[in-house]
Each structure stands twice: as structure tokens, then as C-alpha cells.
Length: 621
Image (cartoon, rainbow, N blue to C red):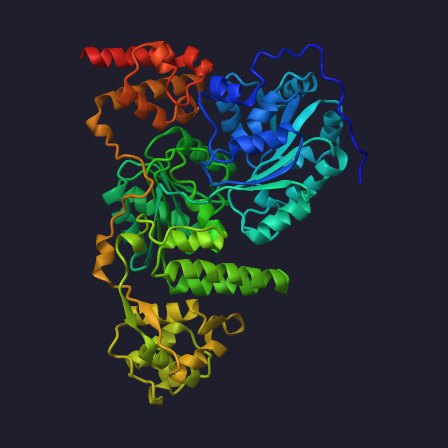
């Protein structure tokens, strides 16, 4: 354990120009009249010097929970953040509000790094964002020793989970903050953590005495839609053209190859689609991410390497062309849609091969058996979310130990309840076929037997003579694939990694084979699914059609001009929701403009006149 550092006296040359009461900071600096949800309780705990673990959904206002006490308390708040893009955007957004913020990461040249370190050492900053790998160096720890620190905020704290989907090894070393700076309050914040991950965060970061603040994970403005794969690219294209023409969004794929192919396909269809994955040259990745953040109508096609810390508020959709590994991954990735609270869609297609591939990846990993078991449980929960015939939001929130309404009215199952059928007899045929082929073959081979398809490989094993040969001709190939997928999901079959994806019977299937249990299955070809509305209802804001508001285009053009002049994304100036409020309320004086939500004193002085001028010109026309 390293030496414990104590606060140095505050520097005498620090000028405090901002209000120090949290509510005054919220109103005058951030432009909001009141705190939301748990924000006030969390801020009060930090102001008292306590530690906190904060679990709050994406877009729920986590950053305010550390930004305001960092401004209000003496000293500088140090924010540990995993991604360069996240730091840069948050720092620029704070500077727009008049907050003295800076970041330290590898994107800065040596002169800028030294200038930032000097400002930090002199106590001239309210917040400093730093990457975990830099914070963990002895050089930076030495700087910390001589600076008055108001708090430590560990953002994206789930990265500490060694077997999580966003693991960062340097996060494991952040326990040194508790060891070396025991009197400085710490916040660990995340939007994604089941009970096991929460326990791991507490244990690894030494937060046993911290208060846990668990906000609702419900994102009522997101409509969840999950459907079986038929032709994934065409399904995606239909979704984009019918529901999101001209919108910004993210498409997730499991492999780099699929990312490239999907981006090329969308480009050929006239859409602006950019690839993003770990093997792209760093310059190309940064350029594509920059375009996504600063331009409208950009679609990013990516592996899970993209997304954490993306603050773009008006992402209108997130689509998955492959099955995520866990509900945590799905929740976090879909949570990047609709951060502004406006209507958004989470669209996913998945198939039998996704299930097989992910099962194989779990079994082939080098993790200990304990962690493999947890991964299997998470994958099973993800499959359960896909196959459920009840409210998807209810299943998703229940996974995070939270209650939800029986009928959310904003997922495909609630908007258009799926058809089911008694699949008991079909399941018995499938399980029997698996048994009679000695559990050595995958679903494709078994389906050929059930359909009575004779070919060289099947005949080589003599499977055309089995009693199950041809007994499944009453169903087509697609329904049989659905049957096998659901049998795996329900735990009656499992994938045998040692046999290269062969299907094996489980103990649970005995009830089906003996006729002791009936099995209801989803009917994937239910025509009602095609008519399922993608439009959110419960908790979603009012519909907004920009084409009906000429003022909307003028305001967006002004915002883009101002953003381009400063080299920042447009939403750093004002989010879409603020522009919508301008369209509705049409403030004609600076006093009226100051009443808009999200307009603090600094933004009023900087942008009030030009936006009011555009509104007045519109009123005259």
C-alpha cells in the first residue's frame, strides 16, 4: 500500500467566480430549474464527504452528480474516464457553460499536456478528466499529492469487471485512490451492472462503505423490437428506409468482416454508412467517429469496440444484426439511442447460428469455469429476452432486479402480441432425431433428416434409414430452425463445443420426450410481426415532424454554423430538445430565452442574441 496523501492548503490565487450552492449551480450554470431522480441525494452525499456507487441509465444525468459537487467543493474534481472522445466532448460541453475544465490524454502534444498540468497544479480547474492508465503512473500520483482534490469520479465503473464486455485492465488499479487518498470522496458511476457486477465494483474499488444509489433502468422512450433473422441486411434496410430516413444511428455486428460488408451494402443503397472496428487504422476510426458526432444522418456500422462514452444525444436508433452476449451488453448498446429523451428504436434480428456461435465462444474462452458459468447464465438470459412472448421491458428490467409494468405498450410484444403454437410434437421429433444420430450433429444436418432430404453426407452415415427420416415434412426448413433455436433457448438442447457445434440432449428434455410436459413456442412467421408498429407510446415525448416547422431548419443551420466555427459537435451548442422548445415557445427576448431548459447564464450571453434574431426574422416572414 502506498503512502497516504493529505490535502495541501488551497492555492491563494484561485478565483471562485461561480456559485457554490449545488442548486444555484444547476440553475445558473446548467440552466435547469430542479434536480432529477436521485441527483440531489447523490450530490448531498458527496458534499458531506461520503462515497457513492451510482447506477443510473444512459441519459439519466449521471455526470451532473459529480460535476456539480466538483464545482461546489474546494479543489479540483478528478474524473477517470476510459475514452478520449468522451473526455473531449464533456470538457468542451463544460467550457461552453463557463466551467473551468480540461483533460489529459494521449491526444495532446507535450506543450498542451504541460500547460494543463500547470493549471491543475495551481488550482485553476474545476474538473480534470484523465485516462486510468495516466492516473496510475507515479508521475501523475506525485502531482496529485500537491493539489487540492475535491472528489474522484470513476466513470464507466463496470470496466472494473474483469469478465465484463467493456473490461479495462487499468481500472483494476484504481483501488489505489482509496489507499492513498482515503479522505477524498469517490463516486463510481455506471449505466450497466447486474447484481454480480455491482458486487465486483464494490470489492475491487474498496467501496464497501459507499452508499449505493440505484436509479430506475427503464428507458420509456426506447421501443424494443426483436425478430428472427430471415435476410438480415434486407430487414435492416427496410427498417431504416421506412422508419429512420435521414436519422443518425448505430448498427452493431459481431465480426469485423460483417461490419465492412454491411457498411458497403448500406452505402450501395444510398445511405451514409461508416465502418468502425478495432482493425481499422486509428486515423480512420477517429475520422469516422468524428463525422458521426458532428454530422447528421450518419450511420456507424460497428463491433462493440464502438460506443462507450458516446454522448451524441440524438441517436434515433440502435440496430443489432447479431445477438449480444448478455442483457448488460444489449442494455448498454441500445441505451445509446435517445439520450435526449425523444422517441428512439432498438431493433435486433437474431438466429440459430448466433446462438451456436456465442455458445462456442463461451466454451472456447480461457476463463475459469466459474466465469464461464456466469457467461452461460448471461447468454441464457439474453436468449430468454429474445424468445419471451411477454413484455420485453419487463423481462429486461427484471434481469436488473427492478419492477416494470405488465404491459409497457412500447415493445413489439406489447404492441402486437406474438402468436404461439403447441410445439410439443415437433420438439419430440427434433429431440428424437438428435438422440438417434448419437448427439453428434448440428441443427442443419438434423433438419435435413427430418425433411427427408437425401444427400451424400447424410447417406454416408446411413441416416436415410433412421425412423426419424422424413417425419418432419409437415414443417418447412425455417420453422424447424426456429424449433431448434427455441429448444436450445429453453434448455432442452445444448451446444457441444468439443463436437464442433453438435447438439446434445439435456436432462430437462426427458419431460418432453415422455409426454409429461407441453411446450408452447413462438410462431416466427406470424404476419402480425410485419405490421408491428415501431413508434413508441408509453412515456415517449410528443411526435415532432421537422418538415412541419420551417423555423426548425433555420435554427439547426445556425447551430451548425456556430459549431463549425468552434470545431465542436452541434449538440454541444444546444441539444435538439432545446431547439424543439425554441420552435414551440418562440422566445423573442433574452429574458424569454433564459427560461428555456438547458440555457444557463453563459450560453444565454454567448448564443441568446443570434438565436432570438433568427426567431424574430422567422416571425416577420
